[in-house]
Length: 462
Image (spheres, rainbow, N blue to C red):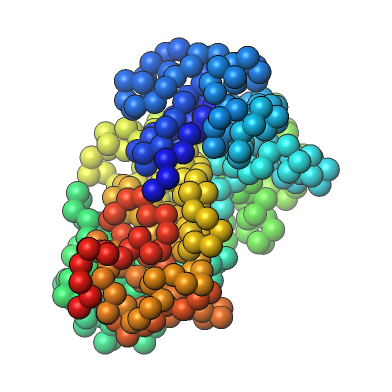
């Protein structure tokens, strides 16, 4: 693996998370911020160089060695500062630039979008990614989370198995005999225990199973086990954040009725102008009388998107206790979830983690040459203990030299699905990976950059 020199500007939630993940992958990371307390916290927690200063300053960028860096990541809280600093980093000689840009104007206005593309090589929008994730879950409310591969050709669903489920005490090899669908349970988490299961694994109550398959096959699977819920029609959103705006626009375009609660009168008026067709209620969504005014008990789903984790968590728990609807909560600080112990939220969205995954996948792809079979998509599952990776298989890859059963695949790695000519199928021991395939790999190993890294060259062929 090639170690990269990476400069991260901004030690807030996203910048800190990105620096933490990239440092854990073995890269040399320099972190810039004007807040010395944030930098002190970062240097205490990880092995990074820290520099106090303004990332929009040429002098500060030169001090950080931007002219020698492989990747410059602008993750401050101000879009315009990120754009300017990316442009400055490019002028100084940074090989690649990534900017955290959140304002909807840079995505919905064609001229502003063109301007952004000219200034920033790769733009990351954690708010848009979070809204997209929430929208997918609302389309498949059975799931705690829904991720996609190969341009939505294949879905990966995480599902919490209740005690009453017909899946409980069912071995996976028997499950496969009973189901006609091409679905694969590729990871299981129960408490601290995480496994990539084989056919002998028996599903237990409270397992969180990760299931791969096409949308029709997943729908049929969950219908057969009595767990399928129809897509929602009425959604209540608490908090008028940027994520709420992105989400509401997507829901309204899909013909879903949206009610949004916002406590700030100025922001509520802005939302009324921006979200035509959305019912806006001015009030505090943590109050029961305001929730009742929004007819919360008659909704299909509740989404908590305020800027305060405490409000999102407590209100979500209350709504869950009063209804059987789908509940999704935005939580930015993971330590709040640790405090909940055995009290489970339905679905949790963490924008900074989504941004970290996206940037890490891009960095891994950069580490390889154009001829290699690099990472196209990456997701972290089971509290980061499992990675799900999509590789584009290039000509000459070592994994194409024979059936999977004859390859020396390292422990802790499962080649789960192959996608070939727009058709997906479960990979078996008889499967042969071909040039041009997309391979979905599930692994407990960290840091895979190229699909050939799944092979153990030190073990003789079976």
